[in-house]
Length: 282
Image (cartoon, rainbow, N blue to C red):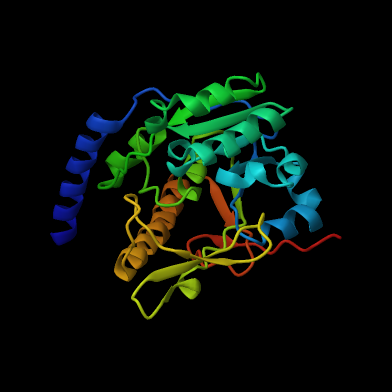
């Protein structure tokens, strides 16, 4: 009874959020170069190994990259057909806007589908930069959190009206992949090893380790919320809880669609998906 009541409340709240925040028509490309398999490339440090040492694995599959990866040397090596941006930082901070979208506009010489959250539409600077490149095809997606009864949430996911809480860019990346024709998705560069990298100093300031495939070494970053205020440890841990729970929600949804998701990231903390080890070729 308790779970039924919770599902009722979550479903009702989801409809309210959809009415308030969702754009009801969002498209995805129905045709891609390699329509059966998608490699979702997170920004974890292990991604370099996959790109450099196992090229035959990803070269015959559709590739998706995220957030700041366009500013890496690997971007023009992979030439991703799909690209997902999720963090408001990239359209709210002028320096980051210019760095990311300016680089994308100047660098992309192949057809690439760029996915941006609906809430970014009101910010014109990044759109002006992207519009300069005819190789970039722009799509918007909804980040509306949708929870509750599966018989209701799954059709809403399928329409693209919402998704599990998108506290990490890989959640919208995977959900967008599931809306497309792909039968199998592979997660690369998805360590999510934040739990082992969180620390609290003598002033009760919370830090976490930031490791990316495009940086030389990990750095300790002060945890901040969307208002640029210092985050508390319980807030950081709750954020992690939401992300890891979201992957189990996605796993169940993928099973409903008769699609498969595999985690090919070495030493990943994501425990929702079946793991596959990719042996290096070089």
